[in-house]
Image 1 (cartoon, rainbow, N blue to C red):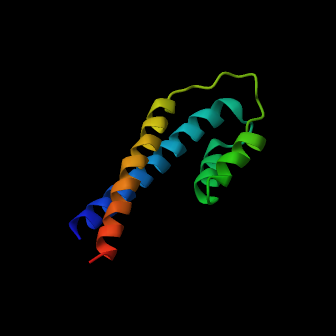
Image 2: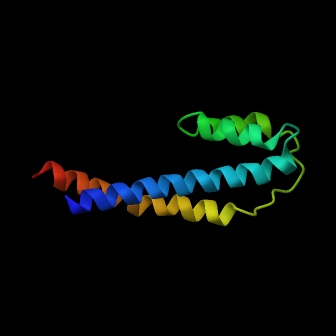
Length: 101
């Protein structure tokens, strides 16, 4: 039971961290590569499910393709995405252990 709760908390924190880093990266990228308001793209990326909003931003929102990306939050975004892996594993182990009780 304890592993389930720990896994659930880690999973929620990892998701929140990933979404925060994704929003920061999109905002920094959209200020340079988009003609539209960067906050609009952050809302689209975060509110459209299954990372479909990120795909829409990459295909439609980046109108200035020749500008260089800031890369300001890219390492943080990658680290937060990698932090999801152990959080998911601990959560699954907790769920399996909880279901086996």
